[in-house]
Image 1: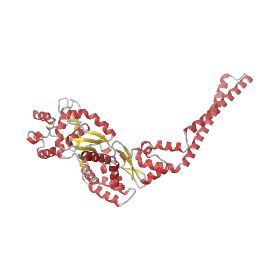
Image 2: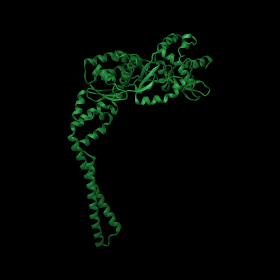
Image 3: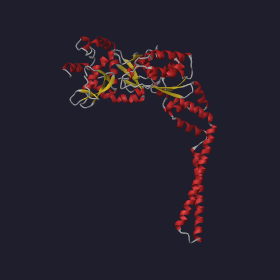
Image 4: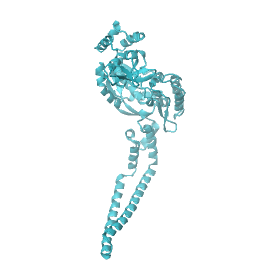
Length: 476
């Protein structure tokens, strides 16, 4: 299966600056011959360094932090005079991460829409837009708080991109290209034939280096499904269902362990813009980079951001709320802090409890003195009877005092809540907007939601306020 020609190619492919030469000299013939010329052209064109980022494809382009990745790429690329490329991951098969659409409806509440299409293991970028997906997009736009001409214009180009029957990957590629037109970002879809051919020898090498009996760090696209590939103890490759895979002929896709390596090789990436958890994961890929002879891009942590309507920001300022805490703390912690600020203090409750305990101890002392007197007076009572009656009496008194304590606590909380009704309403509105469904706004709400509401002002604010590895609050 692995002839000497292929091993010769692997040895020379990873030699320093030799990866394009065999192609130019005609020393190697690609398995898919009709792609050879396009690959030569692409390989030659990729000499310029690139600042890169990427994200899994999602309905309407994905969550808001996609915008933070794109503007991070643009900022660094402008600084270095490098190409700016955003990788649209269309080969992932986890549809549950891509079929949701979060936004704030006209009622001021976070809403979640789910595209319930069955993927059957197909790469999500290959799934066709159907009537259900378009209906969800229509519902999204008709439910937005402000029905302006900008909303209508955004709806028009989104529905044009998400044409019926069009693959999701191509639809989102067009949508993002239109959304960020004029900023100089290239939206790259790895369904590109030249990239598929370029990545083939890397994926061959990764498969050939897989230990016998283990899963290879590649996938094979078989009858439209993305299939995991395993190396049998006899050296052959099979799917999970034991169907044989001809590595030389199959259409191969990188896995999570090889995708970044092939990305960096194809684009000669100088920097990669990533989120915090993504940055940590990329550090674990050193063995794959070493194996395939690729220099990893320098990873920069992207900016995190939250968007706040100016009207809501004014309400929060009037209520003396900290904007930073409104992002960092949970809704429950924010409410607890507000109640403390309004007088419902833990120290007050502890002082009352100490007072009640003192009263209980005095009751105990009186009871003991009385019991001693009764015992001396009535010798017929046994010690056991006395202890039983005394315990019953004290338990009754403890229950009464406990009820008093709960009543006092409730009255204090109620009084505080009533005095802070306006502040609590503002707090609820702020947490609904900044932490929809209990998560960070940028990871929940869709970027198109903000663009439809604020237009280019949203994009310009990101560009103007961009700082790597910082948390920014953008008031619009």
